[in-house]
Length: 554
Ligand code: ATP
Ligand code: MG
Image (tube, rainbow, N blue to C red):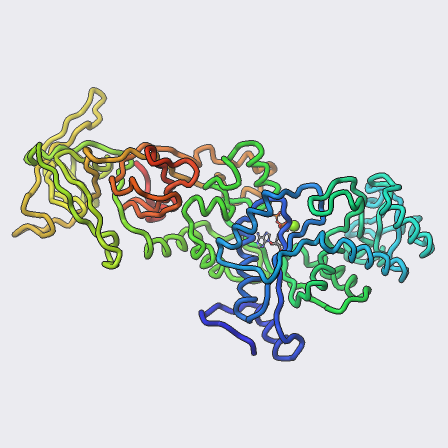
């Protein structure tokens, strides 16, 4: 068996089919494809399909094509093609050979349509789209044959050519397969194969005014490219009958098979490109790459790594079971990756001032702090320390409780990588809000525990003197309910608080951070320098994910 499974990839029913096909000599090598329609950006659902198709090609030393399914001239855009290529490469995959476009095969599709007409298996119908729908029947009632169904082959050839030459208006005629108006599968009740559209196509210009339907073009494209396993999502299960019917009735060398798996549904997100496009067009998000979007580009801008997305796709697996994946499953994949790879830094998001009264006003120090607790190879960074520092407002309380393990009036706490301080007094404003905490420090506690007492509590801090101000963007789910597709209008389920911008302080070491660079803000979460809005003088960080599921800001 041809196999390149260096890492342990869990098997699934599609891989078992492939294993059997190889064992039984049905195929000698494996060829898959990923066929996006260029009418939007890729989302995390596509990533599942990408990992499956490209993953199979990689593990079986086979090939995977990238094919833009661009038979629909209406919605396609070069921007989408560019972004799809870019996202695929970023995810760590590369297509075999050249990029394919379904529109490259328009001549072939036409030729195969003529073949079907010549075999008496297709006819030009002049019912209008509404009548076609009515004649088609329903799940409980059979269809009714069109009065144009029994035209002669010659007449059909003539009319199809007329269609191609633009002699009919849109909707006046279409080409239909002649299969079975009584089939229990509605898709088999003489499906439309070609329709008329007077629209300029991005790749073929005005060469065509008839365009093939997905079911007709897809199976032929697969066969022309020598695809062995054509993998798609479950909603195409019934279409498989048509896929097989077309390939069985035309003269074509290769005979691919279609297999369906369940699509990825992720809580609090929508996956339909049409709906995502609606969010973009109506400015409900900043664009396709808004960090709240479930798109690959949105996740990337938010700070997700390609590895975390691939791990997630592997974790959800490939089955025929419809299900809804918990959002926390995606979050735990990104945490696991970033925990290993990101340097630690300190940031204070909701600051309160601390004055260390026994620290000499004229003094400052530069402390060396480890970039990663378990990875000495990641080195140290310089962190300035001085008399006035910022700490997190929720890291201080006037009164001790049993579960509160931070700074309390009269008690000690260690400042991460620095000294132990003791809170001695506070100052409040007229509203009773604490404005300053007065502390003392133990000058003998740097890098060591003091004699006779243990201070286990640790909090993070920033030197007020050298702090950089940063805008920190905290994201919540884009929708308020786990399944926004379940309500009449998903727009009503939008979470108006999905983005919260706060001003915080970060260490000066972040002045040189690069767009897209990721960090762990100690005790808070993983953050990434925004690639669109951040400037050296005004840093903007996106929260990728909090450190724990329960972290709250106040
Ligand atoms: P959308 O409804 O978002 O427009 P689509 O299926 O029309 O999705 P395509 O561009 O046609 O989008 O999809 C390319 C490939 O990605 C197809 O093989 C499709 O089955 C797969 N795919 C799309 N969405 C998902 C998903 N949520 N889970 C798994 N695979 C998906
Ligand atoms: Mg589609």
